[in-house]
Every structure is written in C-alpha cells, then in structure tokens.
Length: 497
Ligand code: NAD
Image 1 (cartoon, rainbow, N blue to C red):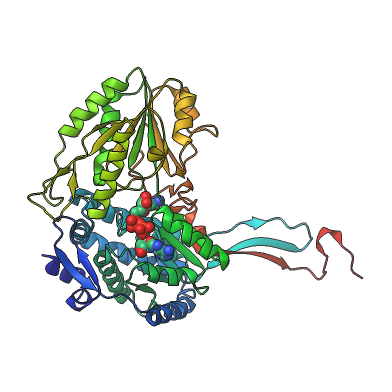
Image 2 (cartoon, rainbow, N blue to C red; image 1 turned 60 degrees about the vertical axis):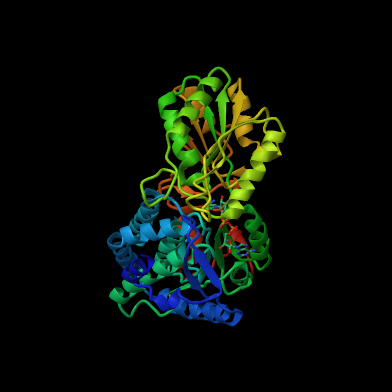
C-alpha cells in the first residue's frame, strides 16, 4: 500500500527502505519504512548548497518564482488523495483531515502566487529637495524549517510557498516521526521544478532527515538567516535563544492551551458541535485543539451532559475507515495522557472518559476515548499543554472572570467565545479581551484559514505564518534615499562646510 502511494508521489524505495530511523504508523504500530539521518558533514554541505541555490534564485523575477509555486500547487491538486492518505498513514489523523492538510497547502500556493506580484514597499516623502525615499524588499537567504509530527506537511508549505516567491532557498528538517511525507512533498516540488525549467537551481529545496541534532545544526548555523520552527515550547526554548545569539531571525510556532468561553446567550447546538470538532478532532493533537472550556455556571451542568452524549456518539478507530477519532501518535503520548488524568483524579477532579480503546485489536496502536475533566480551579495541570484529547471544564460567573481565566496560562495561541451578545463578543476581541494570537467569535479555536496570520503570543513563541503581511518575514527590508538633484543637502539641516 505504502509502496504504491510512494511510487505515485515520486519517491523511490531506496529513499525509505534502509536507515537508522524506523518509521511506524500510529494506526497499528507497523513499520512503514526506514530512513537515514543526515551526517554532520551532509548537513554542512546542504547549507552550502542552499547558499549557492539562493544566489541564483534571487535573480529570478518574483512573478516567475510565483510560476514555480503555481506548478507545485498543480502537483498537489493532482496528488491530493495520495498525499492526504500518506499523512494519515504516518501521523494517524483521519483521512478527511489528511486531505484538509493538503488542501491547506494548495491554498497557500494560490496565495503565494498572487503575493509574488505584490512584494511591494512604500514610497516615503524625503525632507530634502530633489530626493526621494522608498523601501525595497529583497530575498533573505536560505530558510531553515523545523516541523512537528502533528501537521507534517501544511506548516512546511505555509513557509515554503512564501519563502520561494520571496526568493529564498529551503532547508527542511521534518519531524523524525513523519519523514515520509517530507520526502513526498520534496518529490512533488522537484517535479514542479523540472516542469519549470533551468531557472530553478539545483538544491533550491532540500530535506534534511534526522533527529533533534540535525535541527540544532541548522539552528546554530549563521548561514541560515531565518529559522521557522514548529513544535513544543520545550523545543522553542532552545531554538529561540540559539538563533538570537547569532542575530538570526526566528519564527516560533509552539504549544497552545486554547480556551472557549461559553456564555449563557450562546447557541448551544453550534457550541457543542464546535467543541466536539476542536476538542476531539485530530485526537486532541492540534496546537489549536480546544483544551479548556470556560462555561457560565448557569449552563455548566447542561453543557457537560450534552458533551458526554456527543462524546459517546463519536466512533474511534482506523483513521482510514471513516471514524472521527484516530490514534495518538505513540505510547509516550498515551502514557503522558494517563499520567495527567491520574493526577487530576488525585486532585479531586471529575474525569469522564480517557480510557484506552481497541487494545486487543491494535496492541501497538494507542486509541483513547476523549476525556472531559471537570476541575474546581485552573491549577498547574490545567495550565500545562498535554498533547491528547483532554478537555478541562471550568465554571465562571462574570465575563471578566472568564477572560482572566482564558488569559491566565503561559501559552497564547488560540481562543474563542460563543455568545450572541455583541458587547461580550466585542469585549473578547478588544484590547482588554483575549491575549491570544487568534481570537474567534462563534467558531472553535482550531481550523484556521490561510488568509490570516497564524501564530500566538507568550510561550507560543510570537511567530506568525501564512497570510496577511507575513511574507515580509522571508525578506530583508532596505531603505533607499535617492538624490536626483545637483546639491548635497544633509538631513536635519546639518551644515558641514
Ligand atoms: P517537538 O518539539 O518534539 O519536535 C518538533 C520538531 O523540533 C522536530 O522536528 C524535532 O526534531 C525538532 N527539535 C526538537 N528539539 C530541537 C532543538 N533543540 N533544535 C532544533 N530542532 C529541535 O514537537 P512535536 O511533538 O513534534 O509536536 C507537538 C508540539 O508542537 C505541540 O506542543 C504542539 O502544540 C506544537 N505545534 C505547534 C504549532 C503551531 O503552529 N503553534 C503547530 C503544530 C504543532
């Protein structure tokens, strides 16, 4: 099965049949392949090659660079079914979500193609006669991309599509848990490059397989001016200071601890559907998964009851077979979830669900019933991101209290409010409302569109990816002052003669 998918995607068996990294599917723990970690010398050479590729690529006009991204988008459209299935095989998310991830790649390609004709700066009034000022945006250099297992392809594409139209070359260190999807993306991009022709230099895009050490090497190398890293806050705590120490630029997309405030005026039918998708979808393994429900005390019991019924109705099983909840990524994720649930019980929380499922059928697949955990207060356990389907439920009386709870966690990625009261909605998205990078009204915290800037504050890292003016991060800004007069006046009226 995997062989035929990989073949159609253009990845030769020699690339994933031998090596030190064993790739397994979370569906049943079976081995999908083996890949080889790059050595230190190979990473070093890849960075040198990326510099050479950059030197050529930056000369290609930006709208032409957009044409390469357009061709890549076409490859993705053609191979959406296979790449989506491979995402499911490798990281265990349900097929609908695997396909959704590929659609997100297609969407960002479309955005980047348009962007390639709009990399514009400002013209600025000069204080000196016969002078004008403007801002130019130039390609930056090789971009180092480090990505996480749970979104193995879309975040790479958010970065890659924009970086390519901005004139940069790419070095991608994917998660060691999902290297096959990375090889497939690279193969599809290479097909697009072949169609594009000679203007696309060799090594414009490279994949560096390996564990954390390979990522560290990229992060520490001054030849890579921008590092975009997606993953845990633990990883960001290492990457952020390391890049800053060499005066590099970083985009950090780290952990979230996302809340929904559910008010008495909310449309509860809509809210329950939104909670279900955002709390149990992707088996709670999205950075934007709903982890905390802050619900008004007047409706709390009713909402918890409705949620329990809704949870009982979702099917758990093979993500390729139409179930709504697939497996956790591995045993470690399962153990972490169980440990947190045990601690919550010991602290007096009421825990519903959370048990292992289908263990006889899949001894090496870690399927769980999603958990609802009613807690009396927002303690350290609740403040911590556990990457599993655990929904904490907290009560509130006044909106200010709910907003304070929303904000009182170290992370600041996504948030939402369900209300039909315009005052509550506008307060939530105002300067005194949610402190997150994403604040939604009447939709859940997960499932962002690529048109907006994606990312979050505080321990989420402060980075932004995707739409809006994010393209500027992949370029360097230059201020130009041009004198077209025959005089040489100095700024601020300074006389120097
Ligand atoms: P992880 O931090 O374990 O690994 C992520 C990547 O970082 C991997 O490729 C890993 O090899 C690499 N890495 C780890 N330490 C490194 C270091 N010191 N230097 C360089 N590279 C290093 O994360 P994970 O378990 O794969 O993913 C889950 C986490 O990612 C969750 O916390 C989730 O919230 C977060 N995430 C965030 C976003 C976002 O956009 N904010 C998106 C997806 C996932």
